[in-house]
Amino acid sequence: MSLCCIIVEDLQVAANYLIKCCEKSNLVEVKGHFTNVPDALSFVNEHTVDLIFLDVEMPGPSGFELLDQMAFLPKIILTTSKKEYAYDAYEYKVTDFLKKPFSYERFLEAVQKAQSATEFPATGAVASDHIYIKSEGKLIRLANESILYIESMGDYVKFVTADKKYITHNTIKNLEDRVDKATFLKVHRSYIINLHKIEDMRENCLFIQGVEIPVSKAYKSMVISRLNIL
Amino acid sequence: MTHPFANNTYVFNEHINVQYISELYSGDYGIIEETYSDVLAEYPSLLENIDTSFATRNLDGLKRAVHKIKPLFGFTGLTAIQSQCLDFERACEADPSFDSILPLFSILHESFVRAQAIIAEEKARLSIFNSR
Figure: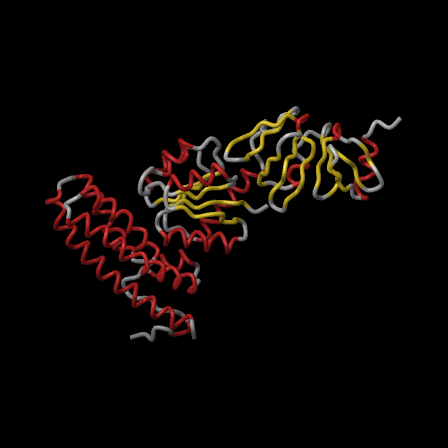
């Protein structure tokens, strides 16, 4: 899974070099480049990102002040020309610390660290009766019982509840193993549904609150086996 | 004198740290040329910040402006000037008075002017090399 990132860096040369590294790697998609903390903060409050390449010294607030103001921290890779910030980097638990300028190999090493940390989150990130999702710049707690279904949108997924939809950067494939299997079931490559919310099921689809959800042939028998059919 | 493109390899200006730049870009001359071009585009504004801070005797601003331009010398392999910048920053911290750093700044500023010319010349030569 490629990571979506932003670059917060006021030195254009360094930002351009980072963009080239990201493009070359095919591991990171750059969603934006910001030259100051307030602009970056506005973006992360509205969008979900997996990773921030963050300079420390910029005009106005520093990179660390951005971290202080964020409700939820994605993976952070600090990019700075001062190794004196290494201690602060450790305190903020950043994923890696790149001293500018850095080689492409060193960049790859840092990205792979971020990727591993994203794919294998700390134990306890998912509880049995609820799930936390990153959306709208914060962590949102969704009770399993409130989720009707989860729909794929390419590199994003949509969590649909009775009164709201939440879009977050993830994939059905990744979620399949992480949601509570007693409640959720994958019924199609693009859908995971809440088994307790099925209203009716027909030949190749089922309905949840009036919404038609396709059921693949490959998953149909599994769905039927999970229904309490009299 | 060795021909600049002898044996199909590029021969850098003598002031450029070839080993450093080879490791940084893994011999990708396309990226090196693009980066030199980016450096040249950003260089004047960063140098202007330095000159403005100097003209207004703003030592803290001068230190920050030198810190800001420093990575450009890393990106272009001018590692000796990168070290000069670091020495200047340390001198500012050790003795934070404007007059005491004047001799060091004078030498550093000469290096900045010389570096701009080297980078421009290198960018032009890289452009020819890459378009062969």
